[in-house]
Image 1 (cartoon, helix red, strand yellow):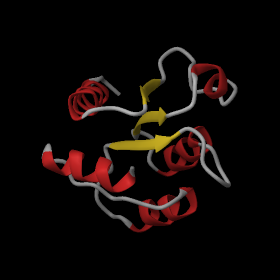
Image 2 (tube, helix red, strand yellow):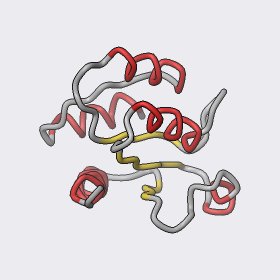
Image 3 (cartoon, helix red, strand yellow):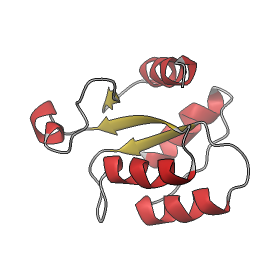
Image 4 (cartoon, one colour):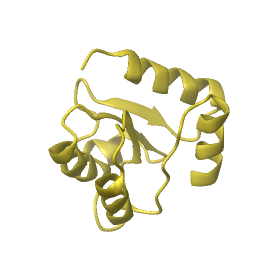
Amino acid sequence: MLGMTCALLQSQGYRVLASGGPEEAIRMAGSYKKQIDLLLTDVIMPGMNGKELAGRLRGERPGLKCLFMSGYTADVIAHHGVLEEGIHFLQKPFLLPALAGKVREVLDQPS
């Protein structure tokens, strides 16, 4: 899924930094000197959930926008605090138009 999502975003002209997990994402973001506009993360991951990852990264990058995704049902992800108002969410599986549209929607929102 990671490879396909990266390819879809790159085909839309986005620069993508891809990581295999939350700890790697934190290291990558810490060493990347340019602006990061969007965190696209799974809700449920081993070691740290997506909301925790977003909190950690926003500590270093306050303007970072986030888009959460999951293949789990709404009942399961609600437990992780991601279905709160104002949180951007994309249900997996998704097609390119849904991904591209949601990414654009999040990026276009005022900070």
